[in-house]
Amino acid sequence: MQQAKTGDTVKIHYTGKLQETDKVFDTSRNSDPIEFQIGEGKLIPGFEKAVTGMNVGEKKTISLPPDEAYGQRREDLLVSVNRERFPEDVTPEVGKMLRIERPDGDTINVHVAKVEDDAVILDANHPLAGNTLVFDMELLEIV
Image (cartoon, rainbow, N blue to C red; front, side, top):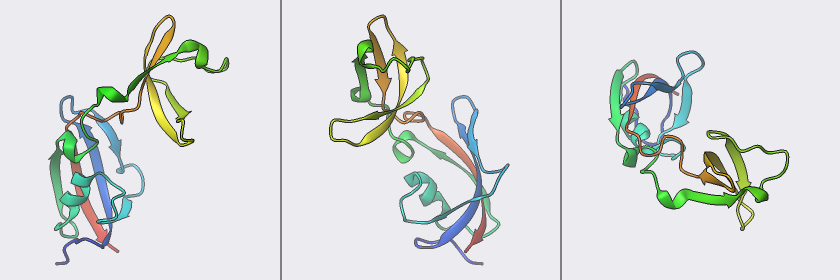
């Protein structure tokens, strides 16, 4: 039986859950499987590593600590912005996702972590940072 290895393009069905709450944060079960090349680095490191060595048709459940997923939460990625700097048509609300431009011209995604009277706290951490993630996965095909 063929095993998945670095450089292979694979198709996988998965369901991702937060270990602490068992809440599903993403799944491919209700749509097409994901397709990616192992070793290309487009997915979190622990996920790609777990697929390596799997056989077609194999199912398994893995648990990824933050360092193998989206990393630890970093306090230095929290930024306080004066409310006056927000455009008039943008109302900051906790949880709202925003795209902001950095001084170097690049844009990044942030979410509103806290709204105060005169400031808004923006969080540039990935929403899943700091969480241990559990994935149920099934290797469907090596393309």
